[in-house]
Length: 115
Image: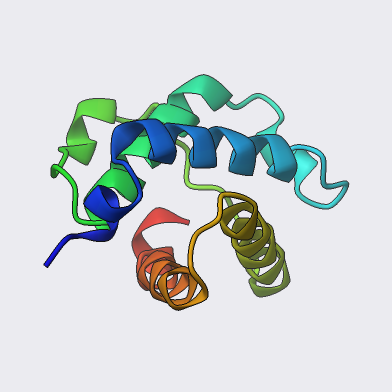
């Protein structure tokens, strides 16, 4: 059985999706303030690696980022908006609906440790 990572083309697709996702997040009036003073390129790199692992690709060591990746103080209502933006991004990337549900569940499972 192929992983989602393999099914959707691996790292190139994940890079495209994560970059699009962060571009969309930064356009949101309610979410944009979370990125003030944040090194967004480092955050994107971290998320590419996290998504790669979540989707069945190579594992990564989050400790290599040390303290450079901030824990954003995202409240429940913000998290719901982030999930909606992610869902829209995945739809735009032609990810199948069942796989979108799986990805959203995987991301939600990381909330307590990564957000």
